[in-house]
Length: 206
Image: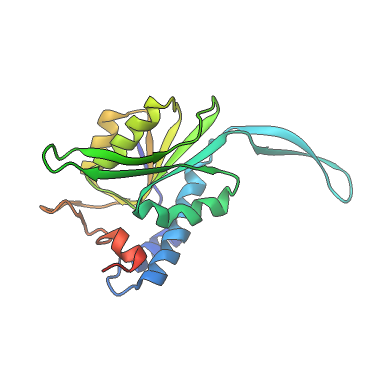
């Protein structure tokens, strides 16, 4: 399952972040802002708990997030979305997963992982600007489930039918939230029209 966010502010910022003339500073700022909008939608069903808060006037019955939120950026481009989601939920824990593609098997291999201990009420939010072939995302979901994760969502800026199909086939219980489902993957496995190389554009390495 996937959810495409069509808010006018998201669409406007998506046009700016796609522009090849957008430099890395603005690209990072836009990635942060778009991530916040998408995460707002992705987190709307997290568990709440009742609390009482004393205001300057009286006691108030309120609600706070009860779910243990764990944000999982896929290195390296996922780091560029981290500030956006932590702006919404600054108390979330952060895990890191690094993936590379094996030259022989063409399959993703985890070269780095640092995960907090899983809890019964944990919700894992995988972040990566682009869900292209879906290989790294599926491998990350596999890894999290092996560690005991039961509730996982994916937040990306753009994706494509091929990537969504791969994730939905392997993990139909995981919902992907995105600002856009683009047209297709080209022969070089780039999303069309996409963003280009999100990692390079985030960090100014090209």
